[in-house]
Image (cartoon, rainbow, N blue to C red; front, side):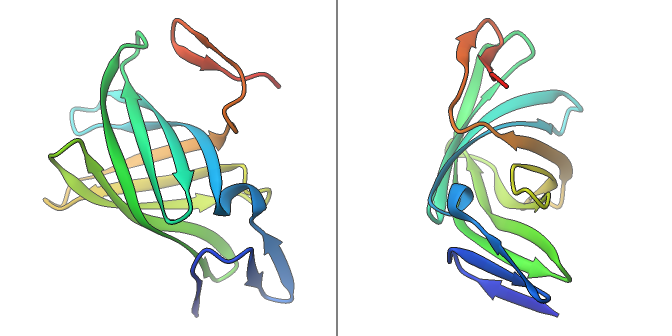
Amino acid sequence: MLTRYSYSHLLLIGAGILVFPAVSFASNWRTNYVSLGGDTLRADVIINGTSGSYKTFDACGNLVGSGTLSNLQFDNLGGQALLRGNWQFQNGPSGTITWMLNKQLNSFDGSWSDNAGNTGNWSGTLSQGGGQLGKNGPLLKK
């Protein structure tokens, strides 16, 4: 059974409650996705409420482009915390994302799909903007 909680502070899973303070309003994510051409690209994602933005970088840390996220919502699907929404790259291709978050809500494995029916993997970790810029982008401090 799918229960939807549109950006509330909590998500009910069975008898437990997951709290989303770090994810639900403003968060930064260091992510990687596989492009249509099979290249793995870095995408630095900023989520702010039900929308967000991202910048993509090649393997050398060069900016490739940017895009937006919209209609972001948390879902509970059989105890699995999901973030779903829409993406658009610059003024071109668009589609949907599904991120399956871990129990700590600080990393995800997911996917993207475009409006032409293509799909790819997308994964990442919560960065909260930490670290400093290096040749290949932010270097996260542990």
